[in-house]
Length: 375
Image: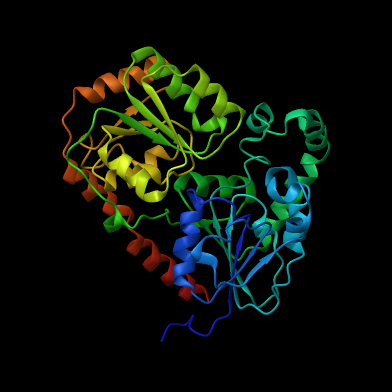
């Protein structure tokens, strides 16, 4: 009998709005804890069958017009929102945090484990960068003024909240280093996982490259547009974010660049499996898409920094038969990598063989053993 069988469990998330990368970790954890309750600042996934029978508690932000669907603008409300949750009846609380969900307060006997995607970027590692790409439009000056006014206190409060966590799990070695630097806490690394056997694969590749992601500046859609405007090769870009950046990049794209707005998982995986290669052009703490690409027998062209070096390990025994790196986020560097890629011969089965290093069965086993050892 598992130690967790009669343990009352809560899962706490920053927000549940879309279903991208970190949400797949949430899905894996929900599958491990079928009776767990969910707490989050805002919830906009009522259509999703994954949640239809779950007990979901949202914060007071859910009831505030304007802020409830613009969670980024609710920054000043979220710390108080998470501290207001009543978690006194739970024996185990798992927070999935890249923002404020770890700010929860539990009773002394409750075990609080935080699966940390990154220490809050806009407080710590990427504070200056976030200022350059605020998405509050005419309210940007107000946001900048307010953040400059209170950022010191926010960092103190975030540090204090991190001390409430009993154990940290980091999604990568890069995140582990940041947790140590900013929170002065140790952590164990458990990388996000993929259900490898669920992915289609195709040895027959079509004449296009592929990239999918949220339309935010650091995802580097602009780099791909500039590069493929120059080289005139075929690329398919997919996003589900209809914003000013998306409209601008689409308007300047040449005919060889095809945009597809909103692909469901099956469609996305099909495009991925038939592509010549999938791009990973951004700086990420960890990104699961390259693993999914290799599960479909598709090579990866990746920016050689941070999460890419953990997702596609340069010194692995299968290198260089599975991916290509580029050194700088420039058109010249990326075009050199593409030229190198097109002269190489890839072994599709080795791609999937490597992807099994990140199979969901490993993640589930490691996570359950870790929690049972701490309960």
